[in-house]
Structure formats: structure tokens, C-alpha cells
Image 1: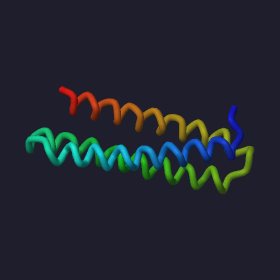
Image 2: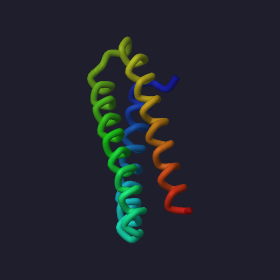
Image 3: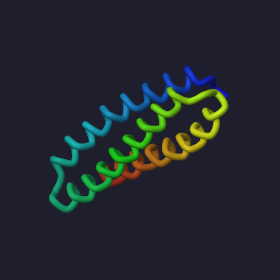
Image 4: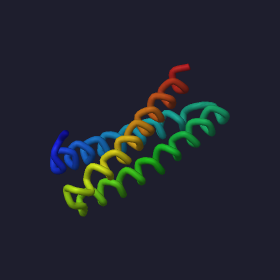
Length: 96
């Protein structure tokens, strides 16, 4: 298991990358038809919400003891997978 500092660094890096990817997806959505744009914007908004939840989890990890880190990390991993899945779904929609 990665130590807390490594995990925090990894998560912060991933959140920065996702911020850039969300910006790019938003630009692509703006170029699509109204129906597709609405579909993409709904999914992008969901991604933004989950990204916000991950940011809160990251803050909790930063403030937590090593004893609590494992529990928070488990929840964070679930959110992480949800966000990755959301990006994959959006890419599939864009590439249709």
C-alpha cells in the first residue's frame, strides 16, 4: 500500500489532469449538436461533482491520522473508479 504522502501526491496529480480533461471535453461538447451537447454536459456535470467529492476526500486524507487513512482511501478508490468510468463513457459518446 502506498504511504499517505505518495497517495496524496498521486491523487492531486490525477485531479489536475482531470481538470484539464474536463475543460477539453467541455470544448468538444460545445461543438456538437444540441442533443449530443446536452447529453455530454449532463455527464460532464456529474464528473465535476465526483471530482469535487474526491477533492473533499483528499482534504480528509491530508487531515487524517494513519489509522483513518485506510478507511478514507477505500472510499476514495471507489470514487476514483467512478470518475474514470465517467471519462470512458464520455469518450465513447464523443467517438460515436
